[in-house]
Length: 149
Image (cartoon, rainbow, N blue to C red):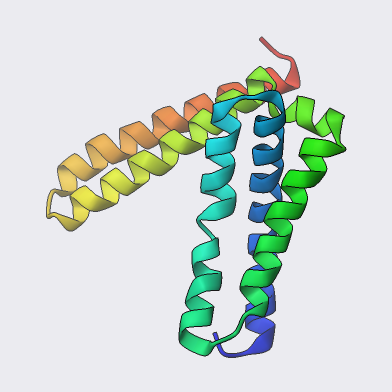
């Protein structure tokens, strides 16, 4: 990823995750709820790895600087100034979406680990079924947000 256009597209995509994760962190801190903060750290914080890796390999700081700016700016904006977005992020439906995304991620990693260990059947059974369970939880959150109980 030495091409500047590739880096711009790559970090542009991650900006979405940093904005979303930062907004959840700001809302969770302001409303004193742990789940949005933890979820925001995962969604907005894990992509920072790529910014650090770009510094390590190429010595290039703009990617990480942009990522941190998006993450902190979004957290401050939602935590201090955007009450409607903050209220939306701590609704029950968003809580279910956050739990569903966490479950999908955990079971996807578990399934990949089991596959790497040589157990394809367990990988499909545990990872796949668990991922589907998380997806159903995610879907229930979408349904709650749409107002259909």
